[in-house]
Each structure stands twice: as C-alpha cells, then as structure tokens.
Amino acid sequence: MLLRSLAIPDAVELTPEQYPDDRGVFLEQFRSDRLAEYLGYAPTVAQVNVSVSARGVVRGIHYADIPPGQSKYVTVAAGRILDYVIDLRVGSPTFGEWEAVPLDDELRRAVFLAEGLGHAFVALSEQATVSYLVSDIFRPEREHGISPLDPEIDLSFPEDAGELVLSPKDRAAPTLTHALAAGSLPTWEQAQERYAALREGTR
Image (cartoon, rainbow, N blue to C red; front, top):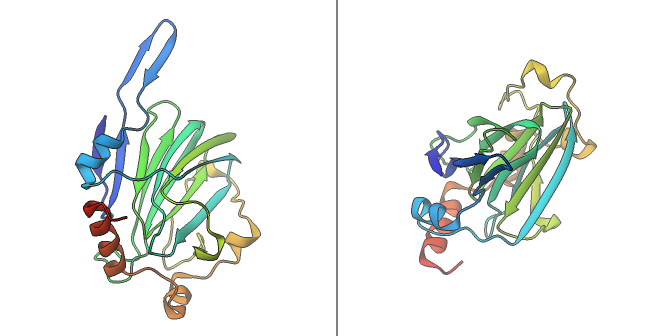
C-alpha cells in the first residue's frame, strides 16, 4: 500500500496494491498498522457508513466538534467520485484550502482525513457507492456543515458531474465566514491536542 500526504496537513491518500488473477482481484483496502506507522497512532473504527449516490450528488461539507471529532477513511466500492478534503481548522496554515482526490473502483484508492477536517464529494458515475470508516459514532448534536457552494471555499466541480444535487440541509448550510463568526469551527490547537492524545494512547 502506497501512502502519500496531501497538501492539507493530516490528510493521506492511500493506493493499495492489487493482485489480479483469473478469478478476479484481491487487495488490502485498509491496514491500521500502515496508517499507525504514518500517523503515529492507529485510527479507531467505531462505525462504518455507506452511501449510494446518483451522478451529480454532492454530499458535504461535513465535520464534527473536537473533541473527539471524527476521522474518516473513505473508499469507493462501486463507481467514481471526486473526494474533497477541506481544512476547517481555525489557525491552520492551510485554513480554508482544499484538495481533491479522484476515487473509483479501478485504482481503489482511499483517503484518510483526521479530526477537524471537512469532507465532501461529488458522484461522477451514474451511481457511486461510497464507504466511510469513521472513528466515532454519529452524534447529531456535534455534527456540522459548511455549504459546498460557498464561493469563498470555491470547490471546483468537474463538468462530467452534470447538474449538482444537494440535500436541503447541505444547501442551507452556512458559509465558512458565517461558521467562523458563530464560533462553530474547530481550531488548529484543538486538533493538535486531539492528535497528541491519540498518539499517547489516551483517546
């Protein structure tokens, strides 16, 4: 498995080695030990989520309060998406910036994003099945969103996404500026304290 740090700190792209034969293909989709070597701690998997989306569906930008926050390990079981990691940590050197990684059922890459980072994706195939390994269970009172259409963040959506489809909740989500003014964003300091606790094993 090849690991590559993204331009957004604490986000990693993972490309598995695939072993095809006349029966099909085999690969290791997730290796906690490899991530532990890379991050200095092994992410907890508390819940596994699956979403199925039609072409043009945008999900996100979503994030959770720290502590504990919610890290995500995102893969595509079927189809193709463009996955976005957005730095929402106030005080981060890349605050407000984002990076996109194409995920599909051919290269079978994954993206890991640590607590405090925002996540979104757009489906590019007729149907895309996305799996998320997350470090904490869903806690609606601690979940938040930023509009994926916020011009300040300015996510770039590919032409082959077609007409974008958002949930009412995502469409009504605040902009980054409004969330910052409301004090609902995580901070760089909170995130670093959380990562340090994970490395120390105190979780």
